[in-house]
Image (tube, rainbow, N blue to C red; front, side):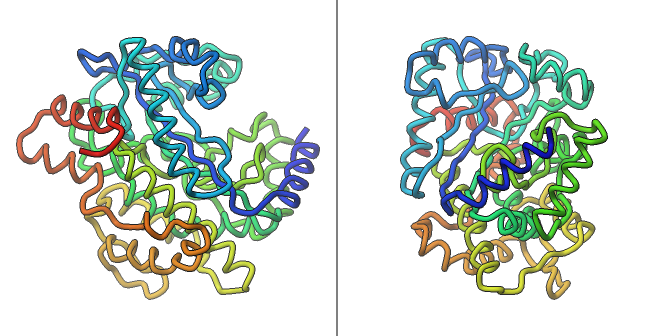
Length: 379
């Protein structure tokens, strides 16, 4: 099975068109009165039948979560149009069913014990394999797929992206609250998901397709996995699509910030691909060094500091991301993303923490995030 899967994936990478892009957004499904999680995914899925959203709405583990997908976009201009369109379509369904939606990396108070796993063969198997790990994972993310032509090249792009996972996480952090407490973290989602799941977080650098394929073959051959989606790394060469999937980011309440985060993720993947093409040296640090910045992003988000892994000096995280944005400008010009690239004055985690420090309750703070998630524009 693995040999056939890998051969097909290799051929698709070799034949694909460079730099098409797709975005996946995960939302909490909420009771409109209490804003607690409610198990209504199947109702949303049924309501989508026969609508334009039907092919682009999927389940994601628990019945109080829904994922919407832009679908493959030829240009970033399509992403800019599709994210608002998909959100509007989902809001319309939610309104009809009498539920509402939230888009932060965690829910601030709903107990994981009250969430039901979706009853499908795929998720029943996840439940049987992972037990507490999968029960505990009530989290909501933001994923970007970037098509990369060439199997070796795709692996090298994924290798290069490892270095910048902390910057993307810090930019996107939106989950300071979970289990009715202020965690003291900017991304509690990441600490829950990447520290609980196997084959998750910062992957190894593989260098080429054969090395990556040998690893995947070992996982299949030893019965460790039965499906390529059981490799939950924060960036991965996807084996179902000829894309590199960037999976590190928290969900985004504000639509414009979702677009900006997609622009940065997309531009970064393309910039690394161009560096590979031009034999520009790329920083490919060992996991232990990336993990130090990974923790800094979880703990301090945009407000913290990061280690410059070239100079080994510490600098503000905002400065690191501004430098990254400067570095991706050639790709941004090629892709039409430059106008969307910026570091927010305050990201979702910082805004929530500031409100908490002002004395606002978790209920008040989350209600504000839900309003953002349900609005077509920020306000």
